[in-house]
Length: 190
Image (cartoon, rainbow, N blue to C red; front, side):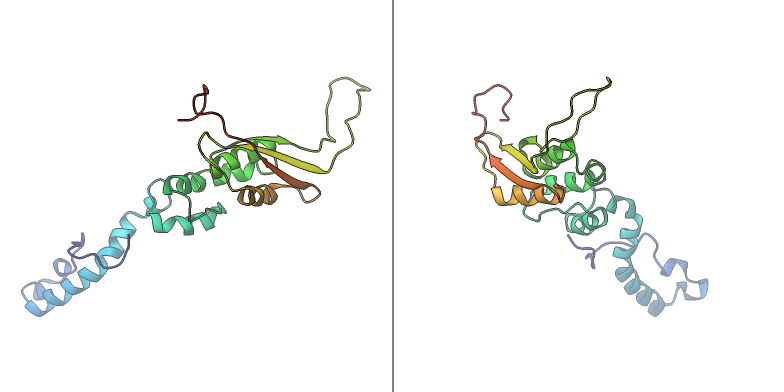
């Protein structure tokens, strides 16, 4: 899609109709302003529809990378258009959850359509009782086990890149790709 000259696009605000009465019957003035109408019609159409450009569900497909850069969505051009639109729409929500187990799980589900199990290094606990046991010593590793949908594969290096982008700097990251659920298993996507 392009927002350049669109053949036959009428102007909602023809300039010739806004000229003073002196020029209403002037053939040259009417032809000249009609040429300007042809040039300005796509611009005015874009401005009339400007709110749609900021809605990921309605924006033109070629506008999505620019919209993505505004919210830091980091979309992959190889993704299907629906996934790119969803990533832009959920970017702010995912940034709010960045660095959490839930945030990483949802980010992996959005990017690759996978289910993820995250095992972090520990080192944190809470209790409502005094003198509770201390947490185990942290392992310094973040392990992410990924299970793709039945019949699908996932590129481990791409998953690792997404995990590393969300992993705290003091932890090492490791990714394990588990076999997908069998196609006839209840709850598996079809």
